[in-house]
Image (tube, rainbow, N blue to C red):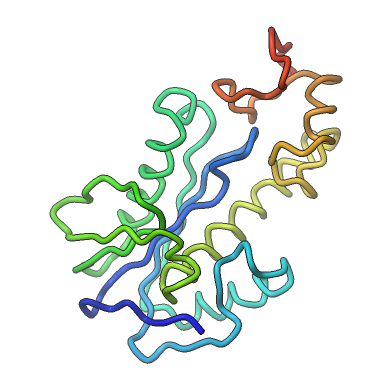
Length: 200
């Protein structure tokens, strides 16, 4: 079972979803949980079924002291690179908090200081600490919802199923139909990538 990290009250956990995708935003969430928060289902979002993630999202939103979600879109990803875009999304999510944050716990090993708030990077933090796992669930569910929405615009890529990840089906669709405004042009979209036509 996951633990609470808490160094301070008003501690935020943050995580992102969608770093390895070929299309769509990278999405980050930040969340503050009560000190007595416990949940036996909560885990790294990648370890949970879609159904369990969707069950957890309203629960987390209702019990959180505060939470926020932010997207960084492909044009900016292509400009500043995916690592910087991931960190920017985390910063943008924390930006939305209305209450003071005293400490930030980050999944992974890379982060840029946010204002003058101390932080800790935790490798595999989303499988260790409640607030990072909660952030991972929110980031994943909000990003999935976004991909399902843009799927309606470009159904040939089947984003409602693959969520923009580099599946064989997604790459076959890129090969056949070219790329869209939602694709990350700085990524290697096809193994044999030369020039890709833009599908407006």
